[in-house]
Image 1 (tube, each protein chain N blue to C red):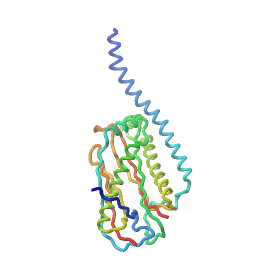
Image 2 (cartoon, chains in turn orange, cyan):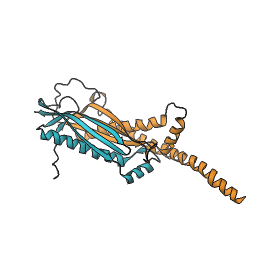
Image 3 (tube, rainbow over the protein chains, first blue to last red):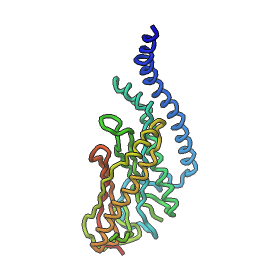
Image 4 (cartoon, rainbow over the protein chains, first blue to last red):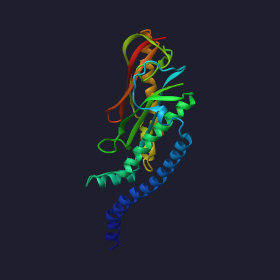
Length: 164
Length: 111
């Protein structure tokens, strides 16, 4: 009887508990941590305000025969972000039915906005007053499935030309 | 012999703001392939507990990209250019755990 109890514990209860508890813990911790990151980003974006707002951050390429400028530089800023295990677990569950993945979209949204924010900070540090032709590039660094990689991550690179 | 770092004027628009292009010297490019550090990969995996930024990778890719840029600038410098316009970045995963960082642009002489 005792042996059966132990066997049940080891082979059924433990895998089920760890299989659910680890992603759940990760999901809760990740939610708390990523909310913190988002709040910090929103504060930073608010502080930047209209620093490079609208007219000065241009993502298209006009015919610019002559831009009057005394200084020009190539700006680039990058960030690598990854979802938490809990989010990966939820993604896997969701992939059974398909549909939108709002928690993963949040991670990517954070990464992209943070990259743009860093680009603006870099532009201000170098004394630029405008950024033109800003591009954001996305590349997958690692996926947790299908290879020996332990992590899942996506890189965002924001780049553009700053001048004053 | 370590090549001396060179600094050229660069932009990703068709001109260099405030300058006039007098001569175009053709396409220049630079690339580098970087593999992940196993230890860093494990730490990054642990960071996936909460998600968010993976700083080790951010720095690794930034360094690698600067190296690719430096190679492109060396090539342009050897052709006698003093600027590069229309700079573009491309990143691709060539194998599990390795990325190629490629950067290209047009070498020009400006004044």
